[in-house]
Length: 245
Ligand SMILES: NC(=O)C1=CN([C@@H]2O[C@H](COP(=O)(O)OP(=O)(O)OC[C@H]3O[C@@H](n4cnc5c(N)ncnc54)[C@H](OP(=O)(O)O)[C@@H]3O)[C@@H](O)[C@H]2O)C=CC1
Ligand SMILES: O=C(O)C1=N[C@H](C(=O)O)C[C@H](O)C1
Image 1 (cartoon, rainbow, N blue to C red):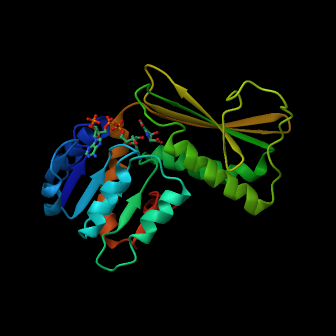
Image 2 (cartoon, protein in one colour):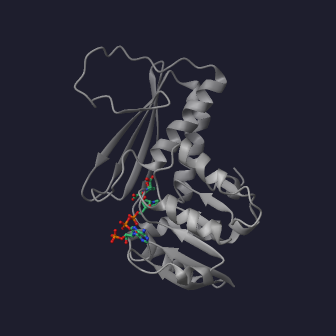
């Protein structure tokens, strides 16, 4: 039995993770911790799952790895400098391993993978993410990661920047620039988590779209990460390699 602790246990994702862990035959939920609770109960865990807030997740990871706990992180807000900081905490062999995944949905991971593959073949690429209005960060971690992957694939292939003749604009009209890729964030009642990667070429537009209609969709990826993180090498970004991609 893998002993699992959950941080952010009363949140939208944390509560779903607690349910999924309780239902898994090979896991035991030993700690469910949220804002204001003592972290001490987490020391009974082998793996801690964090779905909290971008403002606190770094402290949470540090607390866990210093105690040799492995951490599966779903919380968003990871730019390259945060990733480097986490890596710097894992040089000691006594530290736990960390897996940070911008998205645990199998379809969302495939969307990112296909976008990366398609990106060098089209002149233009932009990303539109749509989320529920209670989401605290923009753009989403998934959109940010997709832009990084798309930009890296285009750079490796020697692709030119997406053409854009805009010289005057109302600020924000063209979205955020992430590594040269435009990312647009929509916040909409009724939405959960949705993303389109739109690629434009000569006389054609190719759209790769993913919709998460229920937070249950993230659970197979979270449970897979919990099972695998103890045997991974220090820091892993995304669950792509766990899926054989
Ligand atoms: N990787 C993925 O597949 C997915 C990632 N996410 C990400 O997960 C994160 C959480 O999302 P969501 O569940 O919707 O957010 P919620 O606000 O519903 O849940 C976050 C929970 O964490 C609690 N919390 C805040 N600070 C702490 C702390 N220091 N210690 C313990 N608990 C704390 C919050 O308490 P309080 O409300 O009192 O502040 C809240 O209960 C976001 O960054 C989101 O983008 C979401 C879905 C999928
Ligand atoms: O806040 C959410 O809901 C989600 N957050 C993650 C992100 O920022 O990409 C994953 C998913 O999009 C849902």
